[in-house]
Amino acid sequence: MEKGINILYLYPDMLELYGDFGNIQILKYRLEKRNFYCKIDKYSIGDNPPDFSSYDLVFAGGGADQEQSILADDLLKFKENIKEAIQKGTFFLLICGAYQLFGKYYKGVDGNIIPGLDIFPYYTEANEDRKKRCIGNIVIDVKLGDLSTKIIGFENHGGQTYDVFSPFGNVLYGNGNKFGDSKEGFFLNNVIATYLHGPLLAKNPNLTDFILKYCLNKKYNENIKLEPLDDGFEELCRSQLLEKFNIK
Ligand code: GLN
Image (cartoon, rainbow, N blue to C red; front, side, top):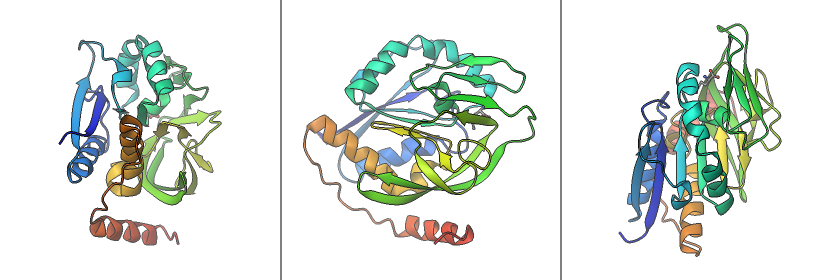
């Protein structure tokens, strides 16, 4: 395998909820099935600082407020390096707690402020009643290039995210960025930040291939064709779920 992608997996010991690690497994699986390599480096507090721009894809999952507050200062050290990587085109996939940390700040239930990287202008404030959380299955309508697709996932967040100027999708079922919101997540060029756990990429092979195609095309400067895989089982699961949520 001479071609492939290098992934940086951020804080795997702290940001991993509701199957987020499954996203890494799916990326690897769908690459290797097509004879591309998939190299995964992990970074957590105390490890050698990574050079974000040297990666094709950066992934970070969700975490509870406690973990977010522990790692926020560490993440802030990389602000300029992360900004540069985003500008140079490294793809960032950020789930839930990581989504929040790329914005201005996260205000916890007790009013404590966890500083964000402030790379994007949205901000998140937890609902004052800690029992009131956006929890459950979620489906959003998303445009990935020319393709319109329904993305299925699971959300569990107290944080309500405001001022998202470029959402990931329109909510068909579930909450989204806030209780009863019509918009979910944040999507700008090579950054997808979303509340969808799932694992997101296992439930949405279209999205996985969209991200892989982006990374490979950018790296090798060519229009790489991804061999279709047999997604019969995934499609069956998807149609069952969509039927259950009464979505046509
Ligand atoms: N702590 C954040 C919240 O409750 C993120 C939770 C998560 O990553 N699932 O909003």
